Length: 442
Image (cartoon, rainbow, N blue to C red; front, side, top):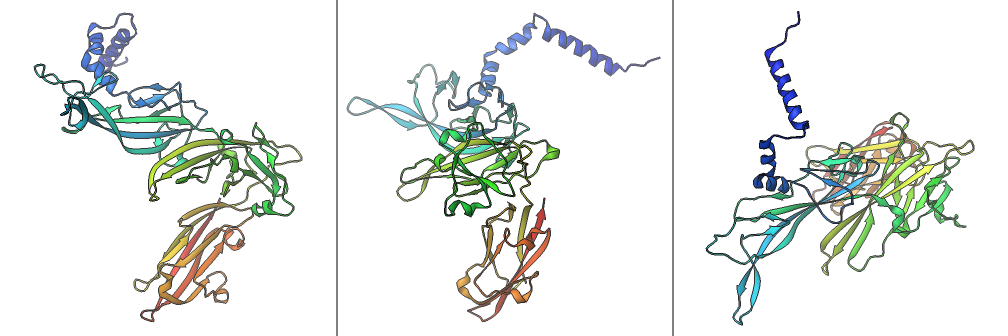
């Protein structure tokens, strides 16, 4: 005999009845009344995400969600907060009127009433309003459909969730404010200008050789033959850097490379941007390079007054054949750098570039890290050495340089130490520090 619990039976009956009501041609009268209630309709409308006209077409807006994203594209999101200030008409001495910024009043925007009605016995003219931008944030859509701040967490999704409502109330007397989104997919880098590339060069410095190597137009289909004999292809994006006016700066941040191979076959793609030259991968047959362009506008006092971004993509396909095999990019090195010393008289170290973790691919060129003593003018009698070469390789310069491409001993996984000491001029005492570098290969 099979025993059924009373709880399970009640739940089953409820589910069947609910499914019948929702799927039948006639919905419950109370349900329709609920949806058509002006208060409910107004609440549902207010909670819809608001998109600007600059957003890609074809996206569907819902409550805290935007769907209809192309699952084959990458998306950037700009989020803007707007405050509202109301202008009230007042009489002037010459008989005219002028709008001035005033307190809370009726504001009707897109059919939504943003404040309480004025008393009927004391009507006032509908005031004008002014939107004031208070903050702007940029992010990217992840594979899980969330907004993420870092480009390396980007992915492909058909929707993005967790968005702020179209309207949010604040305690009076403050006015409501908007939250608006601009959602745009990465546009082709080639739209910005002509792309060129150098093929089969041993390193970046070979571009300046005499005679100069041939610069070829980058194929419109993005297909290149793999480099040979441990060489690299280099992409020239100079023509994609816009001409800017005085007081405006434009730059591409280091592009983020995404290997499109199946996870089990992935090798780390090389992605090195030096000036306007990008070193392309030689091991991944399909790579998406994502570029984030930053435009900064400054006033006469060189103070930033506006920051805008653009999102670009370049897809490169390496077409392998028997004569041109895909070659590994080399060992990827990750350097975690820390320094310590005695509780008293410890030197403070400055590292250039100022990064605590650096990922770099072996293959030629240079990548120096420069260690220096902060406030070096207060010190003298410098002494640097490392635990690999010992005191015999000590240096007495103000700074100490390590080049992780040319110095092969640092391309082996492990921990390395650099020792430094210097005399504090004011007291004649010696201060010291130990810099520890952990190298991880993958």
